Amino acid sequence: MKLSRKVRIVLGGIIAVVLIAPPVTYLIWQMQARRAVEQFASDATELAVEAGSDAVINEAQPATPLPHASGTLSIPQHGIEMPIYGGSNAGVLYSGAWRFPGTADPGQPGNAVLFGHRFLKLPPSKNTMFRLGEVEVGETFTVQWGEEQLTYRIVDRSVVAPDQLEIPLVEEKSVLTLITCNPVFSTRERLVIRAVLEE
Image (cartoon, rainbow, N blue to C red; front, side, top):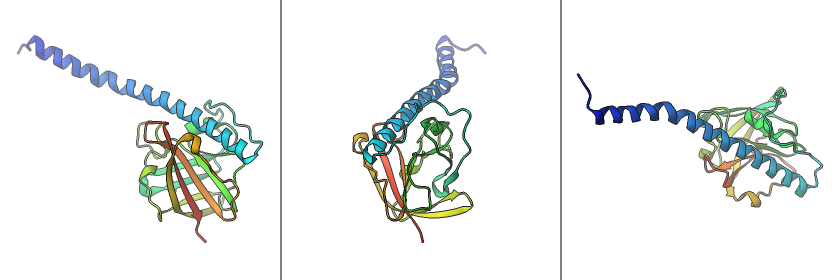
């Protein structure tokens, strides 16, 4: 059976879209992800200056070799399972959550600040904060830090402009702050989740 010219054109268009759209979309995500890493490096530098910290934030190149993960952030009810990396290279964000240098260790008095991507790989990836926008005040999550499994309860969530990102680094309690871009696929705002260690 011979297909008409119009049918062949439509089928050709569908095949082209199916073959071309995924790699083009993935390329766009990667460009946006790089922009997000650069934004997080900038955010962290500003936080360091405001806090009087001497932390030096390296440019946002993918970290190679990747440092050993210090722990794991786990919010299974929202599909998040991320290794936590330290150090001054924001490029570890390509592989997991980044603990802002100079902030507290999880489980210790002070504020442990974790930056993370909302997207990077084909979403929703467990290795990103893609679904962090679904969390609610009162929910709990865990952080594996060394030999300890720590449980944190969410006490606040807010969305702010990048230039309104004010994170107190000195706290009497053990606080964990999660920071990511908002909305998904945009660096327009920051989603900030604040949680305290359950005793």
